[in-house]
Amino acid sequence: MTYVIAQPCVDVKDKACIDECPVDCIYEGERSLYIHPDECVDCGACEPVCPVEAIYYEDDVPAQWSAFYNANVEFFDTIGSPGGAAKLGMIPTDHPLVAALPPQVED
Image (cartoon, rainbow, N blue to C red):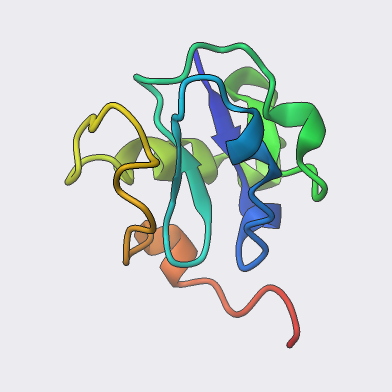
């Protein structure tokens, strides 16, 4: 089981969750953040600090954002399990679901 970052994070990327994560399992893509399902320890520290309420326990993801579970898992298909986001920095890509979304916030 793991936590999932859903659509409210797209184009926001507040990163308060990154500061709270004790295992450094929240990775940054171009437009969204992603929780590595194999590195997450299910502590839930990230969920209450998200200002846009984008983080959900995988069983609690609202139906309209259910595809974000797979997006969080599949984002790591090419990078594997690096063992920590800090050493990678921003990864210059996003899951196709996120990349296909129109801009979510106005400049």
